[in-house]
Amino acid sequence: MSTIVAARPLPENRVSPVFRFAMLLPGGLVTFFLILFALGLVVFLAFRGNDGSLLGVGLTAENFLTVATDPLYWTVTLRSLVIAGLVTLATVVTAYPVAYYLAFHAGRRRNLLLFLVTLPFWTSYLLRVFAWKIVLAYNGVLNSAFIETGLWSQPTLAFLNTPAAVVVTLAHAYAPFAILPIYVALDTIPKSLLEAASDLGARPFTSFRRVVLPNSMPGVLAAALVVFVPTVGDYVTPAMVGGPASTMIGTLIQSQFGKANDWPFGAALSVCVMLVILCVVLVTRGADRRFGSRT
Amino acid sequence: MSARPDINAGGGWLGLYVFGYLVFLYLPVLLIPLFSFNNSIQAAFPLQGFTFDWYRTLYGNPALSGALANSLIIGVVAASGATLCGITVSYMDLYGRSPLAATISAIARLPILIPGVIVGISLLILVNLIGLGPSRVAIVLGHILVALPTTVVVMRSRFAAIPKTIREAALDLGASDWTTFRRVMLPLSAPAVLSAFMLSFLISFDEFIVVFFLAGTEPTLPLYIWSQLRFPRSLPTVMALGTVILCASFIIAGAAEILRHRGLGAARRNPA
Image (tube, rainbow over all chains, first blue to last red; front, side, top):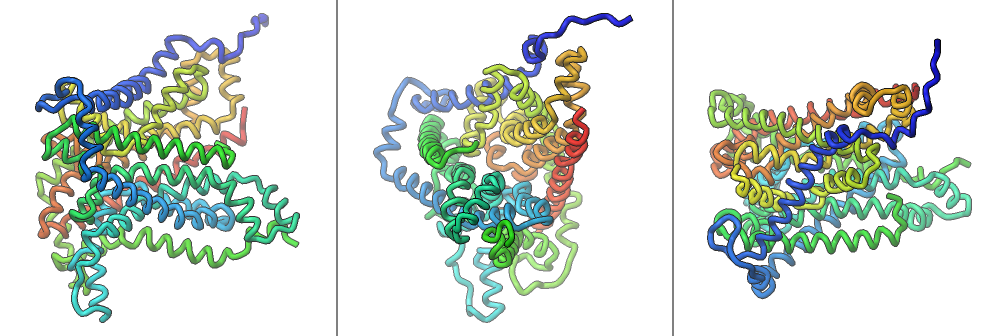
């Protein structure tokens, strides 16, 4: 005998509270405790004075005054911005043609190529930087290769311990970050747009400049952001290949929590970096909207 | 006239460029295996002859095996945590229909916008505050955070690729939320779960920037490498170790990539 069951309400309206709680718990703990609370601690500590204790003492803006008035911090911040800016520009400009090829020309090889360009992303960052150290070193690969081929008679120190070495190393280390967002943006451009452009008589370059490029800008901006953020705060690459002339803001933060042992001041520097990143994110968002975000 | 004449023009030159780009991407990294077999302390040309000596120095090194054990334990625990969070956060983001779930999902992807050094110091302050101090548990917490955006993105795209009708059918047939999740949605996304686990394990295993702040007396493998870089004499050993790590990373990342795409076709072909 079949019985008639009353129609159930829509599935979405009857999520059980226990299930909801259990499913939200792990993510909630991690996001609110490890991310928001920990970042709140950094902001709190930035307004404290250093007395050697964990959370400092008093309530002061002195840390920020020091950052604002000491030219050292302006120099280092500016250098970090220039280095991160150059790295971002280099990675995005060199990644764009690769993403373009993947989206429009790769054909059957697309999945293999996508895998090959993202594979370095999953290998050790420390090892990639280390590889550049042995390439650029005084008795290293590049110098010895040039001597071997007779181009130079003796090694030169010109590679290692320069800001240029930092830019090249970081650009290589973060190259895989840039390709994927641009590829996704290019791949999701409706093919009808391209056909319309060519049907209406646009030459290849015009069609690229007026149709493809503007439509891929959201991906370019996303790529710029994911490269800029880790590079602006990096401290490993300057330490390994940069030498004293390429101290970056991340190096200063690291030393405040290490040798210098002034945690409140390190926290204040971190807050400044986060503010700079916030500005960059807002500018990127604004530009994204101008290009008609599709994300 | 072909449908897309403009787009296909110049593909040959572009192909050449992509090839050059891949060479630039891989050449510096491949120098590490090359010089790990070179019979010289210096990483320089000309090559001095073939040797396995540097690999022999890896055996019977208690500091190295201790660091390896730490890295493996931390990697497995952190990957489990990050994968659990990635599954639940993205599932609730897609099907939870609550502002809280959407907020959690948004914050979970926030670590992309925070430089590693700041993630490291914020957790350093936190673990000291709760009395844990720098330790293996602290490293696990840090690595869950670093791997979280990846697991959320992998799981979210997988859940989104499962046709809505499957979940609705399960609920209409009387399955509870828990049963639907456990018996329908999770098995359908099993390859992605494994892929997320492997990728977050790799992230943890190779991570250096955050772990630098959170390690107590028990270093991980990247910290061991960092400590060895000060000694020029141990450079070849580092390169032998690096070669082993690179090979393991390539294999795990390749397997994860294959898994990530596996079974999607089946789910799409038979939507009910």
